[in-house]
Amino acid sequence: MTGTAKEDKGKVLISHEEILEKAEELGARITEDFSGQQVLLVGILKGSVPWMADLMKCIDLDVRLDFMICSSYGSSTESSGDVKIRKDLDTDVAGKNVIIVEDIIDTGITLYKLVPILRERGAADVRICSLLSKPARRVVDLEADYLGFEVPDRFIVGYGLDFDQKYRQLPYISCLDDTED
Ligand code: IMP
Ligand code: MG
Image 1: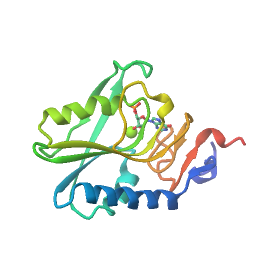
Image 2: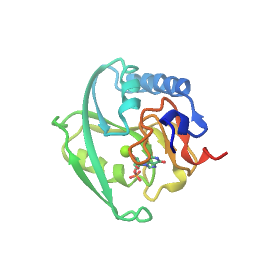
Image 3: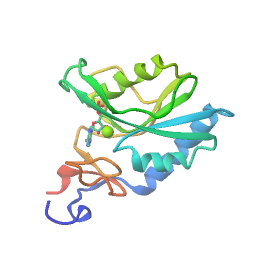
Image 4: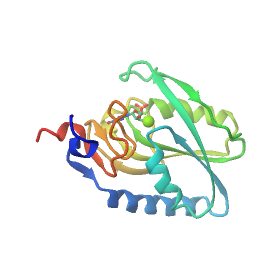
């Protein structure tokens, strides 16, 4: 790990082109599902930023944006982990159609805890749009309503996903542990 981010990268798992095609596909589905309505995209910082930027451009509705920062505590092998909101929404979600935008669903604990909080605040609908999912790691019953791609149980970087805050800017998804291949 001594070069630039792009020199250090592993194998490309999902290309920029594939991600852009997926944003168009999911954006069209959201546009159809919420026809004539307003949607509030809630990006979970920081990992959702590149994916949210692509997705929002593919939704042909009255789209509003807001962001949250969440930290999950507790063991990743238990469903009892707790979630702390470190930056809350500026928007009152009461009566709103909320779509949480995530980079990856891993154990699922973060969103498993966050969805009921937004429902309790009176959101009309709370859905999840995640670029990636690692189903092998799930410890709670939670799936995305709009999912980009399933990935294997490997450490993923790029397109918002980091290792030690690095590699978020890579315009593709790769596996960090492929670099020695
Ligand atoms: P969980 O679903 O509550 O376990 O947490 C999901 C969060 O863990 C994501 O939003 C990422 O920030 C982080 N995460 C999980 N797997 C990876 C990975 O392979 N690479 C980078 N970040 C990951
Ligand atoms: Mg994240």
